[in-house]
Image (cartoon, rainbow, N blue to C red; front, side):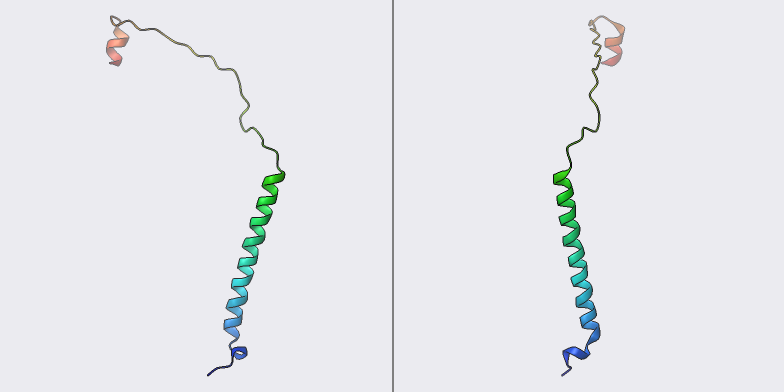
Length: 67
């Protein structure tokens, strides 16, 4: 049976997994803290829009072309 201290590659794998886990947790905490402090910014400013409505009769050629 092998001694655990002589299996250096097991310790290296455990250390790598621990460092990746620590980096993931710290990145999540930083992302969460930055999201709370930032004020909501409106991405697109609102502009008034013009809407044009054209009435079509059933006798018009445009209506028969569309339908």
